[in-house]
Image 1 (cartoon, rainbow, N blue to C red):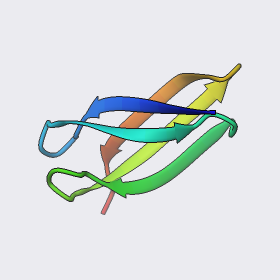
Image 2: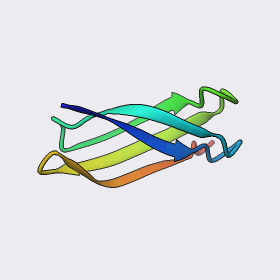
Image 3: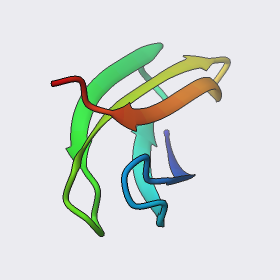
Image 4: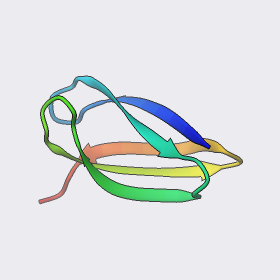
Amino acid sequence: MIKEQFFNCAYCGELISVILELSETSQQYTEDCEVCCQPLEIAYTVENRSVINFSAEQQNA
């Protein structure tokens, strides 16, 4: 099961989205913003096929 998650980029502020895989209980990975190409650290937790925690922050240098 997948879900499209919308959020504002931590760098440029533009509204963007990522596709989340809800069959995993948690995920953490780096993905570039589709507008400004800066690296975002994406992390989320799933419980009962619902996203209960989501963050998209600037990647630590």
